[in-house]
Image (cartoon, rainbow, N blue to C red; front, side):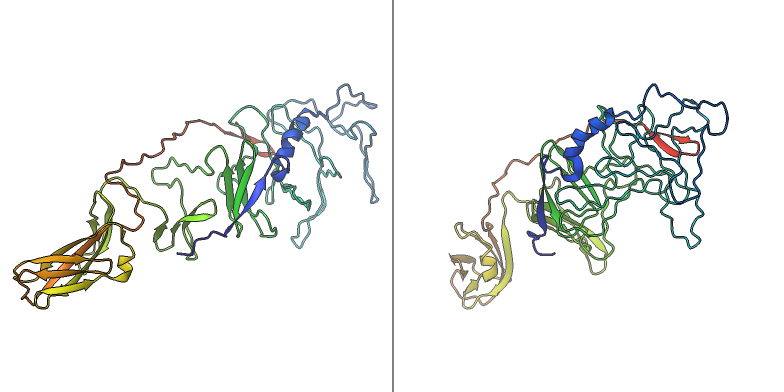
Length: 420
């Protein structure tokens, strides 16, 4: 068991005013984005054709752009299609990179569609009912996004997703996989503040997030519900599993920054508080030849500390000194009990004196020279356990059952789309 890890956690304040995790700012920004409509109604064409080929075609054999659109007050380029088909794919705007792949296997930096901005949005996609963006790759990444933000106090994101609708079945980010991983997160320990491969926050106002000194795989926090909920409907599957393959602890629990529970890789558990259980306590005990057996622990009306030993009468009396370490576990404000069992025939033994350091055993008549066993029972130091106290009740916060159906539709030449 490691020492109490009171300094392993630091506090990181998340506030609406700080714009942390880009959540506060995004709430104000997203409705504005949702209201933007790059499609311009009433577009008049300078050229009309009826052909399977493009009406306009431009080729630049130099290093410049084949086509450029510039507008001082409107949209630089507008692409639209009115074709409606469930079997074919048509695009309002289509861009393709036809460069020859690098023979060495290093990916090129070309792009089928490239958007760039200094302060706004590089690429904006909007869909009223369908999917705003679909990314599909035969061997690479469907969508790859990075951020190079170095602004202190602003948590920019390589990928940011937010649901601003009114249904509880929608999600800001959804990951789906038929054979692999639905959503994966990595952290390379480059920051000095909040590091986590995955961060999940649910809050109504502000959250003070305690984070460990070493970056965790996932950090979850909520000020209105559970931080983490694990569920399983499999008959043999765990709802929550923990494994450490390098010999470290399997589980640690903290109250704020103070460690309350430690479960190491050998199955040894240290609990700071009181363990309350229903039924008779059981323990598995090893034997010399009968294998492991189950044994039961005694139950008592009050909490006690006990010590056992053996002493010897000399001319009918013996003084037994208490083990100093055991004496320090006793409540000195209350007397302790001593039970005597002689190992032979006597005229009767009794305890004539009990002090904080030991007790005196005498025989009636005081002549025997014989051994005896003793058992000491005392109230624990700083004990607060009441006699026959009422049993504590478990919290009965039930789960609300909700059914969500996701339908996977294969879009030709586009990959997989997840629809609620």
